[in-house]
Image (tube, rainbow, N blue to C red; front, side, top):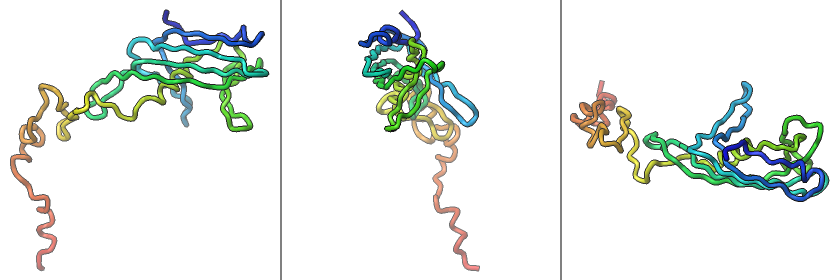
Length: 196
């Protein structure tokens, strides 16, 4: 069943213990503050992401949240820019602190510089936490294949395709004419040291 990832802590707020939930979701997004306001980052999911989470009472009004998310994302090849599916997994761990006066879950730091999420509504939406954790697992570059040839530096054609513009530099519609005539890389310097 597709649903918003959430965990209801109502039961453990009253009597301690654990609360858990799992499911699938087709939307993982989080908000990033920018100098001009906030920007929503939506992860490009292929199909549904699977998630599970458990929160345990650890004392006073504090709860330890642990979870896992697994999803396939549609990324972009760093060489040829073709779409690439990449399956990623991430763990979520966070300290939660209940405060009835909190309307919107808020991140803050404790005196020991430990991050804690303050919450007032016992039904916690996990969407942003799962999305952020998964986004940290996205590699800086991905490749569509280990021997990706990339794009032609002259005309931008994908060199992996059947209709790639080149088999050799001479056949490139942009570089072709230049490649036919060998050029001297030092030609521009020839007049530099002429006697006057």
